[in-house]
Length: 230
Image (cartoon, rainbow, N blue to C red; front, side):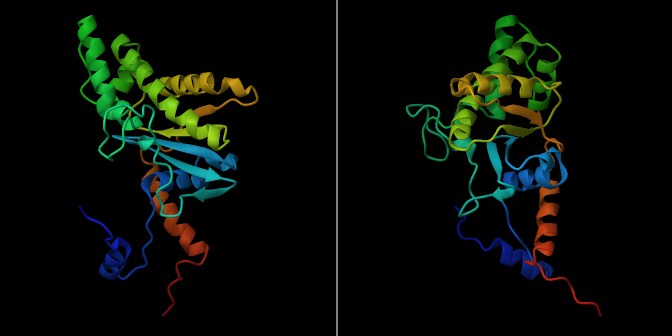
């Protein structure tokens, strides 16, 4: 129920320092652009997978975070307008089908069929899938199918060919390979592009690096004044 809270002013007054605010996934994309593999590309998507799914966008060499700083809410793109109601009020949002909780539910479902142990958390599920666990691999493939449905819609609107993914766990690149395959299957009708999906340089920590990058950028572009020497 909190709205219109002046976060920047509160932190600035308490610390005596200038403050800037940015969506965590946009900050992650900024970190990838300035410090990671994104340095080699003018435009790319950054996909952050946690309990929800967010997308940061670097377009033409600049971070794009929208008018209100809310661009990239991929988790609330509907992939089924008659689907279940999402917490945001919409129906059939991606996060109804692809979240950490959803992946674990799929893994439990498949594990029950095979009589194997189900993973307890996201990282365990990703690692098990990469190690060849059939239930977890099937769950991850289902999960990536849903993500690809929303991501391919976004890529049809914004023509970028590189996607970086940040998440916890180590599945040996299985998530990236599945997502790349599913997206390209959906986009192959265009016949003129192929999307490449790679793991973020910073795993799930990109937002932290992005916060530092944001502060540094504000100094160098003049938004933050340098302290005067005494």
